[in-house]
Image (tube, rainbow, N blue to C red; front, top):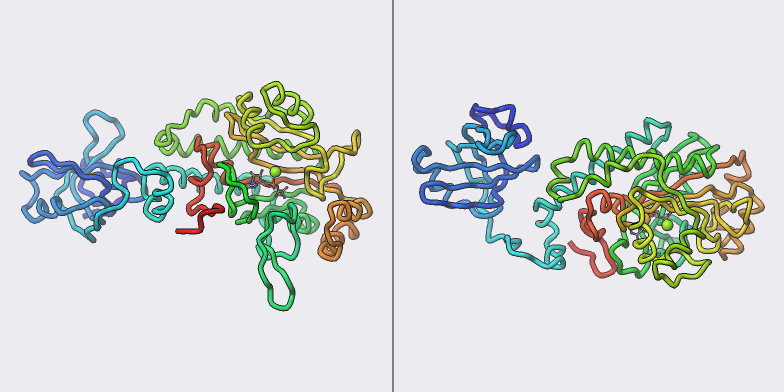
Length: 431
Ligand code: 4AD
Ligand code: MG
């Protein structure tokens, strides 16, 4: 019998075909058994009719438990009521393995129970849909970057320096060389790469040891750092809005099924096209105070502030020019006001908050030296980075996208822990 996948069932219409997968549900009524099958590519129903199937196959159908692995063959028939939905009228059932009683039954489980069983939970419809959107986001990101002159240069994970501040570093002993730290961002290495390639990006896991237990924080997450020579603040934002718009439109194009499973309202996503909104940090502070925040003039936006602010917009909004002292050492200052950094965070709308952080980088050797001192960072750890300002320094800018935050917004998932296959939180290291 012709083996096919559920996603390809339509092309086998009215013919015999076989799918190999797992039974995720079963319902019986008298001489009929309805098996719900998934095979990774999709979901379908197999109808087993006692009056047409052999005795042995009927017995097999009776034995199938939830999550048993099976091969089911038969005629592919379009659902009488739902166009484009196909089912199999089974003539053959082969059991590969009878599953033990499956811990994730249909009844509602708490999220901690589900996360403890994440290795199994991944099979359920909702995680299945999220992971497929995640895959598409990664693909679309690479497509756009490569089509727009960015070369992928992998950054190291083990590093001797911090990128985003020393308080959030995971440290370990590293042979005779003292401490090594898990990378917080590959940015500094991408800055080295652009002097060879003009435009470069990386994509990989990064680590933050911050003790934040919020719906936006993971201790291990995936970041894409992009960096470009000869790019200033304006162009940096343009690149970001084009890239983000491309990713969202690709997901709308390719993942309609997944977004429907997630019951994501796609109207706000359709609006994600350049130009995005823009406000200054100062305007943002004024607005969130009107909305009830008590944040100070010179503070970073807190999680609740971001939520409140980003609910005000139907499309992503850039918050520009933060006070330099709340941002990282490498950011160039605004020429018009040297207390401000030439930076922007991109907040996703609908209350999701920051998904991208970026800035123009300080390209002047002496100024950068001064910044290292101001931020109490040891010069010896940054000699190689300072070299980039000694040998043909140029204006440049870049940004980092947090993959899970982006996927969370696109999927309409409130908590980031569901957007990564196996989440690492301050209280979770398994499975
Ligand atoms: O804003 P961040 O800290 O910026 C950087 O690390 C820069 N070096 C990036 C660059 O310019 N190349 O982090 C970038 C993004 C944030 O906007 C957010 O989306 C995500 O990474 N992020 C986190 N995601 C999940 N859990 C955390 N703890 C995160 N911290 C940051
Ligand atoms: Mg940030």
